[in-house]
Image (cartoon, rainbow over all chains, first blue to last red; front, side, top):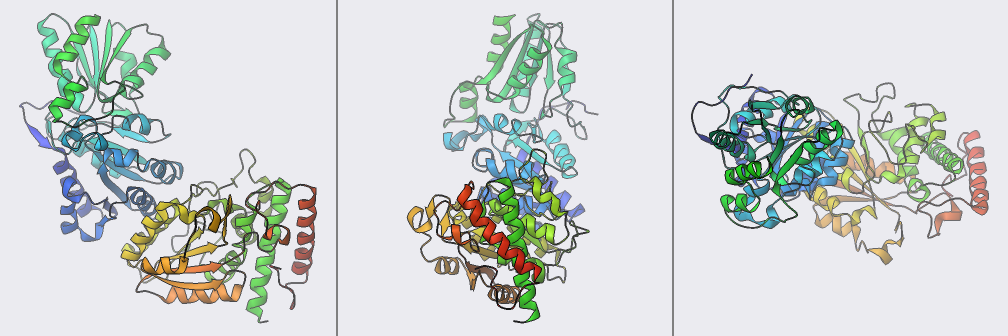
Length: 316
Length: 291
């Protein structure tokens, strides 16, 4: 059961990742963390100090890291690997696909700084297609957690689950959404706000923007519901089928390209169900990443409260 | 010839025979690379490996990672001959719904430890398995036998894995290179030269043990020595011939995955007949199964 945070705050996602792994490693010697020489960036280097026998730095070799993780899982280890999101899903795609998913092995992947979060690292370090790639691979699970509470729950949940799990999450701070101790369900989205006119489906960085946009729309007499669809694969199609009929418009908001991401996943459900309701997908459009502050990039990809509000008003 | 030598030569003949019968029945297949590891497989399954065909998932077994996955057919023949499944399965190779796909699949075939075929990837998986064995810190002599093709070494991932193995001195993984001098499109020297393979592996931090991959004794000696090494990564460099044991294909450019025409079928029949006789006689004193 989840409840919303009662005050504004923010927590560093990498800090949550490291603290949670640190605690898990104490509880379970099978848990093992792997890095590809970004331990300073992810904070994973701390795990080398606290659990030297449960930490492996493979060097700058992401493909090798995925294969090693798969091999470790064949002896019952529970591997968590970290690298920047594009270096996981693009550079090591075939290793994740074959030695992870196809071969029935377990790899938990922390792909950090997806989309606009890459900020000053720029276009080479940006992925706006990681959901697209990962959700196209059979059995792979894709998660886009919105805050530290959700991320902490997710890591613990996935540690007890076999398979390839891709967590795309920022390294830096994300605004608090949920109250401490909230828990969630794999494959179940959260209807955070009910609405009559519009349904906004968001995840990760898009969630807080969507909740703020819904408040502004309400002030203007438009009733907007908001779903946190942090579980992109498996997708909560039931919740979409329950919430979409009767709405005049559906809007998706994702820190990702609009091709084969969260918006496409929603479009598939809507088309297959024959709802005949308009869908607007907010996210980057046929663009590569670029350098800039996160705020600048969010504007460039349409990830602003103003754009969500305008999109709703234009299409209602 | 000692009894052990006779057993190993007989083992090679049986694996080669079953593989050729299977491929001839299929009409095509990865003959060249499957043949060049036959003697290795005989030594592994008859003498070196710890395994239990009744319990393919036995956690104390040695692992075989056939990273050059296209050589699956001779691995399947070895597994069938050593009790992992019925020999009749061999005649389902590559059929829809088979448990013996062209490239090994750990989820489909008893005795197959790793899913391989996308070249280079088995090297990292073997490194992960070896690391897991090390972390378990059991007083165990368990090993991971990683079989890599010489053409496969074109793949950068092999060298990522090798530097990891060397850095970690991961002797739990014994790297075996099938140096058969050819890759799909021709001779290594003409496609991508391997230069000095032994020197290369040594410069990567490996102890390198060369062996004659056509000779069971030589292979056994190298693997036995490799298992004693505990202070560095270790590599057995097998000098082999692509399609060894099938003279018709030994010097042919298209030995990688030929489709058999009438002439090839006759050539295969001759080898099959000779091997059947050799096996029937229980592995003769004066017959070399690879020639």
